[in-house]
Image (cartoon, rainbow, N blue to C red):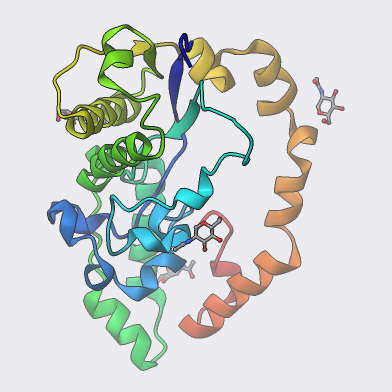
Amino acid sequence: MAKQAVTTIFFVLFHCIISYWAFMSSCSIHSFTKNSIPAIAKYFGSKGRYEEVNTYLIGDLLATNYSLVTLPPSKCNEIHLTAIIRHGTRYPSTKNIQKMREFYDFLMRNATSNLNGLSEIKSQWKMWYTDEMDGRLVDKGRADHRHLAQRLIKWFPSLLTEDNVRHGRVKLITSSKHRCMNSTIAFREGLMEGLGREVELEPAVNDALMRYFDQCERFVKEVENNKSALEEVKRFKEGPEMKSVMEKMADRLKLPYASITVGQ
Ligand SMILES: *[C@@H]1O[C@H](CO)[C@@H](O)[C@H](O)[C@H]1NC(C)=O
Ligand SMILES: *[C@@H]1O[C@H](CO)[C@@H](O)[C@H](O)[C@H]1NC(C)=O
Ligand SMILES: *[C@@H]1O[C@H](CO)[C@@H](O)[C@H](O)[C@H]1NC(C)=O
Ligand SMILES: *[C@@H]1O[C@H](CO)[C@@H](O)[C@H](O)[C@H]1NC(C)=O
């Protein structure tokens, strides 16, 4: 491995990790353990935590499962790593906060069933999201990235080295979205922490690459703004599984079926 060409590129994508347990974000990182996250949390949000699929992280956020990166037994060496990484845990976007608020108001006003569960929901559910939270990264999201960087150093100790960072062989590419830039900065902090050094490493912003869904004309025309390309989404929304979920909700809340919609 005399001359290894290492170009490590980290992409931070735009996607959303809407986390309903984000209210934990004021806690310190190490308190994101089994006990501080309500067991019900995993059923909420449109995206799960890393820790939900990699449960060994729950007790130790810096734990690494080496069997995930074991190379074939021959004389292979890792020479290059490209990681495509989403931004960390964030608040819901304003659009979704508004939808949640509408549902909250509706539930408080219209749900009248006298089930125990409902009075508990009505007395305990605080609608604490505000419009300004608009998709911003939460502390947990910064921690996601700091820890991921440190785990990657443990996994690829020959690639993520101080020398490679110093010689420009490690690159960070991000979209211009604030939550992505902040995720990238948190990732860099984790890198420095893991290497035990301050190293200069400026993230490059590249929206043509990272936000192709906004900038690629063909994608926008042929997919994004094309109803027939999104046919499966429509069928899912109108399908029997979705219908059953909405009916169960309406039954529980003793509300007319028509009052629960897919948009909620
Ligand atoms: C580590 O990863 C392997 C391979 O995916 C998996 O089978 C194993 O369960 C993981 N170990 C832990 C402790 O999660
Ligand atoms: C909710 O209740 C109000 C009256 O309190 C009523 O005007 C409104 O139509 C109800 N909304 C739905 C969707 O049932
Ligand atoms: C990014 O970080 C800065 C500084 O910590 C903070 O003021 C800002 O609100 C953050 N933005 C997002 C979108 O998380
Ligand atoms: C829209 O999507 C359909 C299905 O993928 C495709 O056949 C069609 O060519 C697309 N229309 C445009 C204008 O790109």
